[in-house]
Length: 346
Figure 1: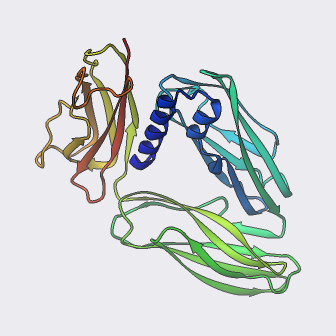
Figure 2: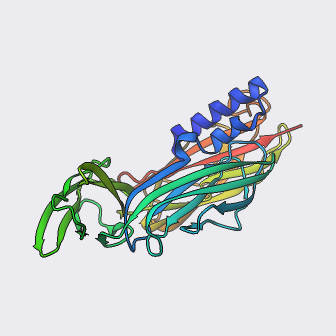
């Protein structure tokens, strides 16, 4: 979650607390906004198995317990961590929904129901839809993966789109991608009884360090209308770092009680140095010496202690302490950030 997204959740939660609102619609909107509860796969080639990920976040002080998750249609498969049924404050939960273009055809719709039984009995419904086309074939299937890419080097991949329908005017009109580091070139090849298009996809050498996940849209003139074929694109550029956990909970503390030391692990795809650690809460203590001469390592363990003042800078607000921690490394654009929370109660 971005820092901006976290701030929005915090502001909304404080507003809810100040007004004394406990209506489920308030906190459900913070778990996942209404405009993020639906996804349209649009045109799906037969044989493909496209995926969309819904991200849920617990905005509450209390743990959020997931009772069950179901889908209304066997045209989908659901993938999620079945052991992660209790979400702590600001912890994320990902539901990967895949549309079974391998076994179904035509227009498909499904409703995924997420049932919560704590702190309140309620549910959230997520919706997906898509049209599985037997006259389309896309290779590679599912998504275009650049894999691991060296920072500062341009990379290219290609995909092939084959149309076997009766529309003689069918073609890929153009491509669109919201990511500025992706560009494309389209070529067509003549074949009897079908249309074959090759789309060369280029990842610019100026793409920054980190994970890239975006959608490339192929705009086609289908039956006289412009329609879209979404192609997921993935890449791991330069050194990437996984953070465990990305949202660290220090648990429940009494006023003035110092938290026990807990740790966050930063694991890189190659060795890196931590040159600086910055925290926006002065009551957070990070007993780790770092500088430009620190050794480069694959794994760094960052200890966290909250001194928990009763008042003043760093004191909990409305019974909750929040902090974001920004880690500067010796690799350009590699600045992992994680979040820390604690609940302070009498």
